[in-house]
Length: 417
Length: 168
Image (tube, rainbow over all chains, first blue to last red; front, side, top):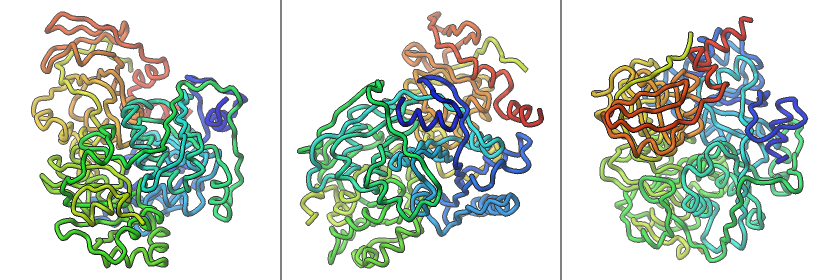
């Protein structure tokens, strides 16, 4: 069995599972985001009164942090009251940041965990060797009511990352290259495991970016076998006991792909699809109205530090605005403590509240019609960040910061010391 | 309650990778009433959809329909707008679960978008899986729904099922 299958078998209380089988799994942690008041509605519509286990539920007020309309405020109010009534202590209010980063910061995610959140990018937790998957409101309500949910045991695809990462090339570039090569629907219903020597060159932050973006392949979940880099990150953070599962020798993957990153250049996904990928050289010179650095994909402390190294002592282009959204409160505090925030603000950055911000087109950095944005986030769908007549380019945090400085898309390699 | 055996409706046809932002734009996510949510169906891809759609009409699409965000609003809006079923090459997996949970049949039918034009009248037989384009006379075979999914649809969605389970 694959490690992912062993995690699901353990949660289903079965010795073995097979690909395609539908199993009912106990969920170790279930997260709800403030977009999904429908979760509470579905819970009550199903006759729910008390949640199955209040200690296995976490509520994140992150997508509307803080509320910018009366309706958002009313929705968040209902979530807070629900948590108080139900004894849910893990209420992450509007100061805390994006659900996935908060899970990592607070040691709530661990290897072998079955983690389900009402957010599609829950695949990110493969960076910790957890089974993370996104669901909708009603599925989450079923977990709240019963503690369980059904899953189909997915086929697993192996993506082997070979070679040495060149200067100026990051995990975001690698995963864009993979998505461009395989297509936005390649991973639908399947799990994706990353292997290979490149992983040893990637920090937890970079591994999170890699696993996060498998959602844009359509994947159900992602996985990186925990190693010393994982354990170093988890040490002192995670209180919960955990078991690290390993894949049996000879496990047959549904497909295997090798990508050699040696000689790779930074990559860009151009409007309006995440798999519309090309080397950045193709788009050099494209004028940029807004550079956006943040979110669960590209708003970690390392990402802000890379931007600061490019913008140290410089000013951004006067025709470009630079929105920075730390992924979480912990990221913001780190950026304050190490001087990154000061460097970025002095360079002309606009800091907004840790959270999802304009990534989902509701507030804090919306795009007007005809505007062009380069973003470190995950999606460039039409209308994703505001006007459907805006154009969104996806790139690495370095590519975003370099574009803020130049006022146009440039190769960040030349700007990185 | 049982599943309606024959679904007939006018088709609205879309290409590949129609994401949930196009089905239901993010700026309306704070709406929670299904009737209100239904007013913005397909707004990001096709602003005329809500003006033209009638109860029981069908959506036909190419690959990966409903990819992207987990927002259940995308399934709620189509159901509230009157969509009777969706036929596509493939679906985003979270959207698939969301729609089935709400009792909206999602049919996997490879190649469907190439043999249907907007406005064609489509008849789908839930029992045999046969798709008939009544406008062109062409037929196509869809993949059968699993027993698990049929059980959810026959119950009118997953909520009545879980409700019964919890009461039992």
